[in-house]
Length: 269
Image (cartoon, rainbow, N blue to C red; front, side):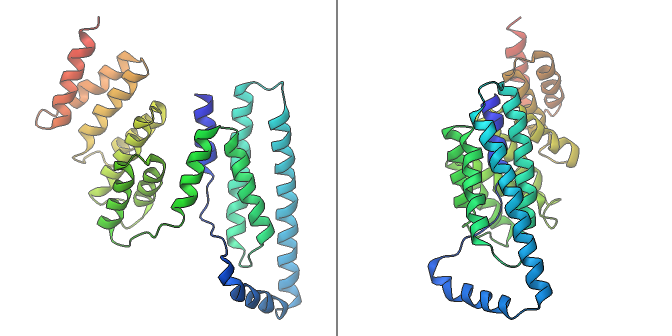
């Protein structure tokens, strides 16, 4: 579970940065020229920003070196230290994106740092990191149905990391947050964790359906899947509680499935 936690933390720090292809060299030269022609105040501000980011990256590099080489840390300490490191990288990533001038050396070091953090989670974390990096290049549709279908296509082919990211973006979109597709998108976020046997995160995501869309027609599905998730964790009493709640929706498939699962659990006494 600790390795999964590290993997999730490493994946969650991914930003929306893009890199310069070689054929954009002329545009980069133009930006350098524009910088040279700017006021001294602007140049000093940019230089100060670059130095500050560089110094903080140095500190993160040193922290990661100590974390990777330490032989005395417990897995819990490594997980806690990694989570803290991820949060700091996220803050720096946001600050970097606010700067108009692109510091290529700093960006390259961010990419390297991301991979080093992900490497703490093993091959699975690196695989998820690469999937997220590839997703940065995917064009997002402006139409809600096409956007939803794009996310669903990733889910259907087992690319749960990319599907989860896209569904999260869908739900976070203020224009679509209370659309009828939003609670279904939230269910798929939970399903993506469930499919990867990450039952605790799945519970957290299914619970959001209850909290944000309590009158949605997808509420019974969320209750049923909450029950399944608790059952997978061996928490029988909690599982039965949610399944009983779901079973009240007798006219929906989730209610029928919940009753069947309840009978199964009761027969195990």
